[in-house]
Image (cartoon, rainbow, N blue to C red; front, side, top):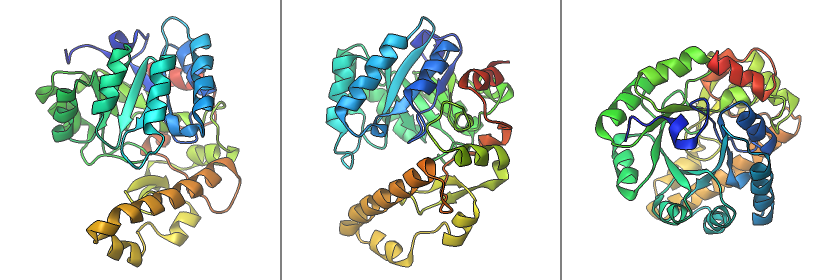
Length: 316
């Protein structure tokens, strides 16, 4: 089973998923991706209500063409109070696939499979990969240490080869892909396909400011740093003057509270809420307080392009 390619799983032309990005991904991007022969994915949390989510699914279904696929990313831990409602919408309306993150995918896999929906699960190590495989996941999204946002600790080669050798389901690599050479490298390591995010931030169709897109053009891999100031969990951002000013480490009081088992959960929830609001402002408004999430693959981003042209850079 692990030799099955992403193109076979999703009936797409090229083994690429346009990765789900908070506040960045939208239906325009995914539709253009499908037209170009790849799959597209949107975070469910990009929609404030379930009705908005239903509308997006209907728009994607109406625009879907042969050789394209669409899905949604679902945060499956208890901190996401919208989790079960969003899952119900996916099952009722029908989507091609779901990518689960940050929690146990057991209930998602159970319900999704009853409606013939494929489930991929984000993992960063072999231990969790084996767990999701035992729960019935259809494939693994192997998040490596070159991914944007919340990334893993292992290099693409280390992670892909270990998972391919020890798991019986396909492994999709996430992180470190900005051009065709990178796609080929991950496939040669044994990946069934790749999930690509940061290069699509600087797309014409992306739902972010021109300043955010231009930052992805003008900054490079060496300008990506890890910060604990967004969600409490290390996350990659562009090292803008504002990021340098506020620092990348959690405050001393957060450090103290995080050592308290009873308070740790609440501290993380508060930090996540504050961080997401800051990220939303930076993504949707021109402000000097810029906290732009991105990965090192922006190194290959030289201009703001349509999604279709970014796909061409990945396949030619």
